Image (cartoon, rainbow, N blue to C red; front, side, top):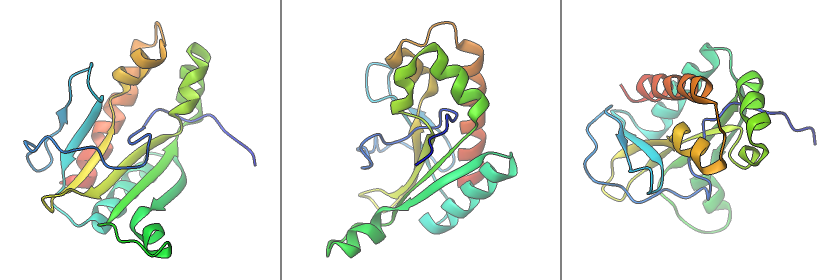
Length: 164
């Protein structure tokens, strides 16, 4: 299998939804403290399927490559288990991702980017992704502030397009 370097849009490293803070407003991002999980979340005004479709459209509309779309609920069903709707979009930009991995090769653990769309325990549809600054800090990617900021702006735009 051929691997490519992609931009940081990571969400759930363990592929399971993180506990919700419970204070999200539709379309408004909440960020956990840097010493916490580093996950940014938004509440969506749409279903998981519609939110994912809007997210994918926003990502491809900016010319990024979609690597995969994982449907965790469908996979759970195949295993005879149930899970509320939960999907992850994996995508990236080799130019930005490579720059980040040159600064810190361990970032390859969190690249290509991932954004999760899932149903929270209260029934809200959530969009979640890793805070790029938190990831850069986690991996010790020094002097990457401009690239990290660019990734953060892109992730915020994708999440906004998907949730509003």
